[in-house]
Image (cartoon, rainbow, N blue to C red; front, side, top):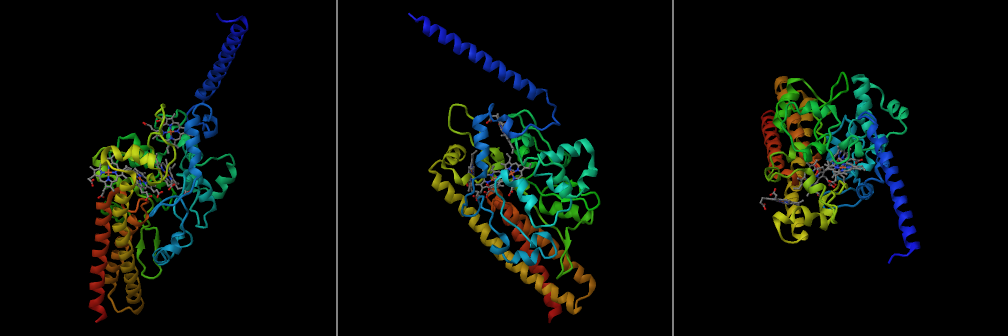
Length: 408
Ligand code: HEC
Ligand code: HEC
Ligand code: HEC
Ligand code: HEC
């Protein structure tokens, strides 16, 4: 028998739950009534998706791994050759390792690198992209600081960037990416969500528009061919006079064609493992998979077997050989730059040969840089990384052989 008192309390609880759920529906309705060009901030989803929100907030954590991780290591200090390679360009002033998404906006605002214009925000805050859609491409050129000051409520990478206002469904929010995709076939949503930003790009020198150089394909040779055709350079190297291309963060282009791509995996299989628990939600902490034994167990062990420690060693073995070769080729490139610089200075080498030697500098540095700046230290596709480094090395050897002819 249920006592009267108990009955009343059940009714009260029921009524309370009814009111609560009505309240929820009300707020859902408000949220759903907003169109896709109004941004709902992460905080607003906190009650509906508490576990994902909590996971999202862990992007603030900073921890190092052997070759990667989220500590903003000063690359210029760790790899001093960079100051010569990037001489004449912003990256010779400041270049730190990438960290969590939560920092993207403050890091671009605080960098001491000069900023071309507001389009630097294209991969940092959806506010910029929404206004770009509303106001047109002229927005790319307005001063960076002007846009930042006019949008104090702006939020860094957030739910909207990958979902618009329907969390759970992957939606592309970047027009530069939609345009890039007209040249490249990619349908897997687990790659599309990330490749919006984790790609090579350049800024159109006249309009400041973000463009992905995929017109001929996504390998370094294809990109060089395209850049040559449109006569593009990021900067002129002050020592050699070469027209240098600066690679950005080509995770997507590197990953494509890899062993794991062939296995049908996408970025999110390794970077967003399912969080333990009955809800089967995906982690929303985008960081090195090597930091979480639970994550490795979920995303690697089903295929590889063994213990998480063993898979970490396997990854580090692949990275070590790429790291070693990256540093060797870096020293060879540095020596080449000094020798070519000397040849330019003395004027002993005919002009057309100097042009050929400058092209070698341009192409070798782009291939080397493409591997160096890619954030997995070769793991995403060790074959491609070795191929680019070997090809850079061959170019440098060819250039040195030509220089030796004239140095005799
Ligand atoms: C097969 C698993 C796997 C896939 C698929 C994968 N990654 Fe990774 N990713 C890794 C591993 C392992 C590392 C190395 C982490 C380290 O060195 O600590 C890494 C490193 C990174 C890093 C640097 C992280 C850090 O903390 O150093 C970024 C950024 C990244 N991946 C983005 C992507 C993107 C974007 C894609 C899809 C195009 C992708 N990854 C696909 C496993 C994967
Ligand atoms: C960097 C891209 C990205 C951001 C930012 C992002 N998500 Fe996701 N989210 C994904 C991807 C990718 C999936 C997996 C979709 C799939 O499996 O097809 C996902 C899945 C989900 C799901 C479905 C359940 C699950 O875990 O698979 C929900 C709900 C969700 N996200 C909510 C959010 C909320 C809320 C935020 C902001 C606090 C957010 N997401 C931010 C990429 C993102
Ligand atoms: C809107 C652009 C954007 C999207 C979309 C995006 N990223 Fe990022 N990502 C960034 C930026 C910018 C940084 C560097 C932030 C910093 O250093 O301040 C970054 C950093 C990272 C890092 C390094 C963080 C660490 O702890 O080492 C990883 C890993 C990563 N992203 C993976 C992903 C994955 C996986 C996806 C897709 C689910 C994704 N990103 C989607 C822009 C993006
Ligand atoms: C769908 C199955 C599958 C999943 C999931 C998977 N791998 Fe693999 N992986 C393979 C296969 C197949 C190979 C090629 C054979 C080999 O080297 O073991 C491979 C190769 C590798 C290699 C050697 C790569 C090289 O360049 O030589 C490493 C390191 C590796 N995997 C790490 C990982 C990590 C770390 C994860 C999880 C974050 C992971 N794998 C998830 C199937 C998978």
